[in-house]
Amino acid sequence: MQEYNIELVDADQATKERFGREWGEWAARHMHLEDGFSIAAMCGDDLAGLVSVCWRELPAPLPKTFEGYIDIIEVREGYRRRGIARTMIEMAAQRARKQEAYQLRAWSSEDKAEAIPMWKALGFGLCPAATYPRGQEVRGYFVTKVL
Image (cartoon, rainbow, N blue to C red):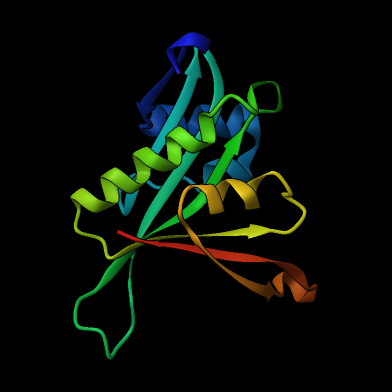
């Protein structure tokens, strides 16, 4: 990451507000500070990427088992294909492991063609699925890695 002058920093409320202004409210809405964590990829003063994880308890019959769910992972177009997403996911997995989460999970729609091979290369299991936000089918994959 250093060769591209990318620094990964913990996001705070000011960072969340900045993402909202610069990337749109959708990005800020998916950032977690109290119920998880968010990591911003910075290139100097430029917001290059974001990963945000929330903690979720898995339902019964599992006793007190929780996961880290990646609610958003985005890398700004000019910064893609540099390993930023990979590094942010690896850092998120380390943090989730440290919190004793059972797994790290995410959703990736099939239109994110570059992301699916990355998840596989990072050792995530791939489960084809469809979701129906606002009644419209979106095909993709749930991805999960046991920690």
